[in-house]
Length: 226
Image (cartoon, rainbow, N blue to C red; front, side, top):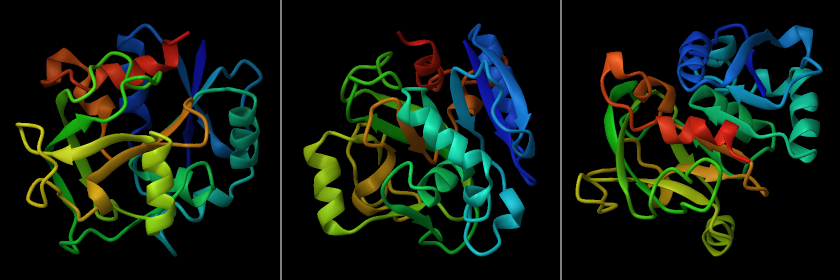
């Protein structure tokens, strides 16, 4: 398997993602968006950063790069796609997933560790965890507040497409544990198919043992799931 990590102007977590995947023995390469998806692509990661300086809206310009047409087509063919932070914003803006990510409730950039509760462990991205398990990973965003209409949120719930919710260390999804004001404490969701997912927290920053916690490894192992 070769995971193509798409680099846009302003991406800054692409190398982090490459190192994390390499640590998990997942072949990965960084691909400049203007070059298109390589033929041997068997997975796609949209990394974090500030593509195009977050002009217009975070992820809005990158979502209109021609390579995203290829990413959508690959997803339709069953290729796993994961968007992280700015990649989640790109995924949302390009229609890979529902909802939108907008300015944090605090109206400031936030970089901190948060707790997440696993809501659905029956997906490639969460199979390494137990439902209800609490993991700790970092966030680093200024526009991470998840917004969605009530009707669409209910659909996500009914279809079990909420992957993670922000919670406290005991697993309670409280307002105090919600770092950015995301609706229903949602931190990550699935697209219409379980092999497509986006989340605002950074699993690649909680993967390498040398830099601390490794709770994010399970998310990235989704690329190796069969």
